[in-house]
Image 1 (cartoon, helix red, strand yellow):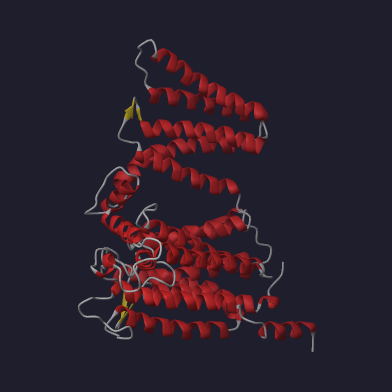
Image 2 (image 1 turned 60 degrees about the vertical axis):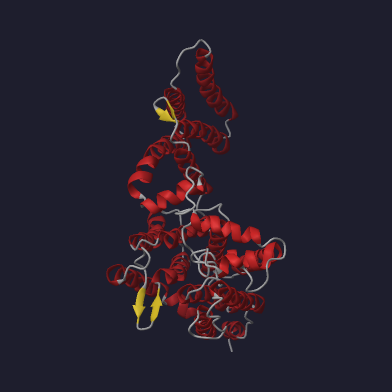
Length: 490
């Protein structure tokens, strides 16, 4: 028997990570009980195991998910890698089909009715994208920063994202963007992540403070221009190690603002928008001078970042007014404190915060949540399931669930990092990113610090598609981990 055969036998006899499986079982059990609590009707008092209730149907989904999990860990790990791209293409085809035949369900056209079963293909694309990325990265000699490779992996993420947005399922589409963290782990420059962070900050400031005009620009635009100048100086110092250049940028821009401030003391009317534009123009001209003089490409990239930031800022208002749907705009305005709409877009969050706050330290007890039982909170057994935990089990119960999720995610991170193949590691980081994103956004949404975008809490929210999707996502990773000694090395 060859050494390779020995390795294959050892891999097949490898143990599944039971620690993670136990946490999974705890999650789906707690989720089932909280779905029962959230959907419990004081009048009808539906039994826990009754198929006429949401908890009974969730039990069916749980049973099928466990069967699915068992099958997934029995499939040879090579099967996942061999057919990863085939599965991805089939998933894209299903998304396109859904786009044309799906009925409108509460504004979303992302559900397929197959007999008595309703599924959401967008949920399954999460693990399909993760598998496709893992397959591509595991190609011999693959270098992410080669232009064709970067375009390829970007296309794998953006294609389903665009289709799902067309299905009016923006929340799920945003989840796909989290795969950028996988790309970062595999060599994507941190500067790209920083640009994403900067874009979010520009959008928030530009919109939140857009109502007050400071001359030719709004207050928010002036604030963002100042921030662009600060970011530019910081990038010069970080990438070029030129402290003197960074200091000059600060002094040049600061002198312009200081001069305008002094003039304002002589009762001259100052256009702060124009002042900010002049300061930014000076910085841009200085960067052009540095690039021409030293012929350093990094100066060109920083210059493009500075100009691109300003162009993005000026497109923010157009995107907000013309591209976003009215309900999305209102949700953002409520989140940013621009409007208070306790009967409309802010109703979910307002009632959710009341429910969580009323739970106190230890909660009101199982099936004793008044906000939940009186149906004050829409979607209380799906996207807003966490408020049921907070109301009935209080701060202690909510903290325990959050700590269990943290342990779960840290364990997945450990599993991803110990993989011996690129395929396993990339897929593992995809799984970690998805679970982390869902946890942060869902809980943040329920407590009012994130916009309401409608994504489920893993294993807790009611629904077969999400439970199956998360189960497949997790147990493929556990199967890959079980066979990691057999991985492809490079």
